Length: 159
Image (cartoon, rainbow, N blue to C red; front, side, top):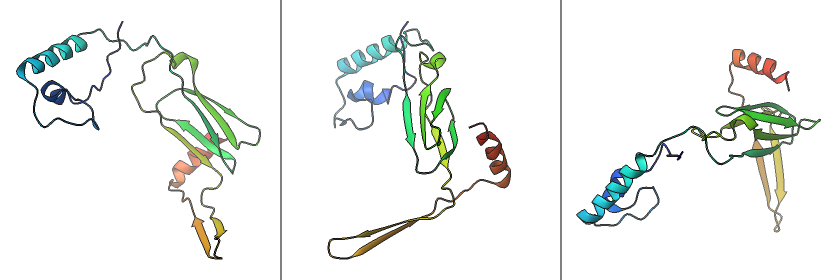
């Protein structure tokens, strides 16, 4: 069984000019009618292939999150993942669960994480070669509502 991607680029540009993806140089002139017919035939042949949700390859995504403060939240919105935290909760290893590794991915991999540094200002001071000083102050604000924050506290107790 073949895998036909859900996004094939701009098929009209492919038929008329021979390119289909953003970033490819687009020729100023359209292709000859013979070339357009050949591209259209190739496109029809490609699209008539059977589709499958299972892939004959194994997809593997592995993310290592290192944080200066203990992690309080890890969530993957579109994929089932396994999470392994170190004892001090400063590092997490996130991998796809084995039962979804042979599925064809049809969503972006979105990973959300939070640490204890939310709403705590941090500052850096750097002295340059000429004695000049550069100062950076950062505050990562928490935009959660009180209700969302309470739900987050409950879910983070599982960590």
